[in-house]
Length: 269
Length: 275
Image 1 (cartoon, rainbow over the protein chains, first blue to last red):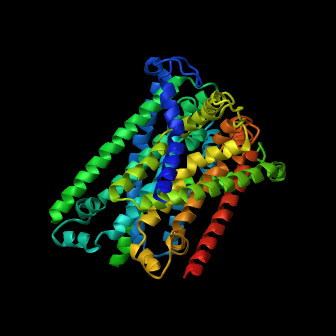
Image 2: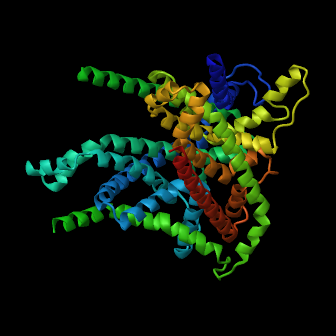
Image 3: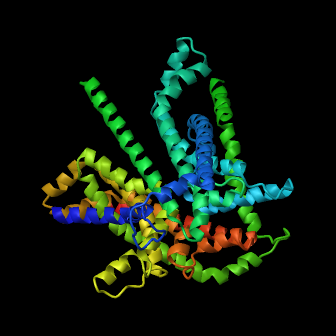
């Protein structure tokens, strides 16, 4: 039973990692073939570093992820504070239902519906190139918002209602009580929501595909247009680099988390 | 008096989001409906809705592929989630990270990589040829598309089931064992019913993207297994028939809503049965 479950786990992970292993191996391939291996080479990595469009797209993706996750965090945190105060009312439950829409709808429907809105606005203001950084930013903020709200709201519910009153009794103005007491208390939720929003935005293809224009392309969109033709192994090289950097980040995050847990348990002792 | 002021303040601080949601969540959906019932010049028409019957086979194929991928994911994921939940904390965390890690890589590239594996002259077939076995035609078939869906969405099934199982009260399973249940009985009568909430959210998290995908079918199906997502994508990016595209999206959205309502009903029914 034990060896059976071990074999099963190995097979599942083999399945999950097979295509990733393939692309890492072929990113070092001497020829551009994705079938025949012909010697070790770093030429695709060199080609990648010389490729202006890919690097520009990478830069665009980062800018978009940073701006959209930051804006979604600010708007979403403020919204959660408000929603928490609405208590049980028809307004609150309908607002929450609307918040769930971008998470439940298929991504293609979210993308298409936003594209229709932008195209309509474009027709009104008589431009043919309404799609660009602005529309992408709006789309990304929109699909990030529910994730921020749904991670901040539970934290707000956990915080003691008397905290802010206690701060006010001690002479704090309501606004500074909010920033000095409530915000630090819900900080873990805000950070989690922001990281989630950042990674979602970094990785998004489907919604970006319908809301971006030729003027501002993100990495997934550049990759998509390349996979329409034959993909050259420099894309494999790029993916290998992304994979390794995410792996390192995750390991670091894990170590930091473990250290802080150890510290906490020591403090408790 | 005080309460009123607090409410006003709450409305004020939430107002940017309320405006945002009205403009960018509600309004786009209204536009989907508006475009569905108008033609290119903006006049009311039912032509788009009438056109839909032409796409009935595509819709049916999408649903069928989506159900197949979801069921396979469920069968594969349930044992994995159970195995992970039985490990020690450190190993659990590492394995969960390993399940999540592929999701952070562009799914476009990973799907493309499957092409290299499945091609007629691809990695599997060149391996088979070396062994003296006749190559198998795999790419551009229905099963290849389903494989792509299973591959891409398997983590969405493993993670919710795992997170429910990890929180299960061990005293419950122990009680089940004490009452004379063997290993399989414990799993069947105790673990499976208690992890239903995870299963239900896993099913929706796999079914929705599978039914609406448009890239996987193009790459692994070679264009002969069009799904509804492919048709919608083409209306918006190639033939620029936004009105037909909008009506197709509307039907897809309604389809998803119905299946989710069905799932919710099904899951609460199950819960009552367990009690």
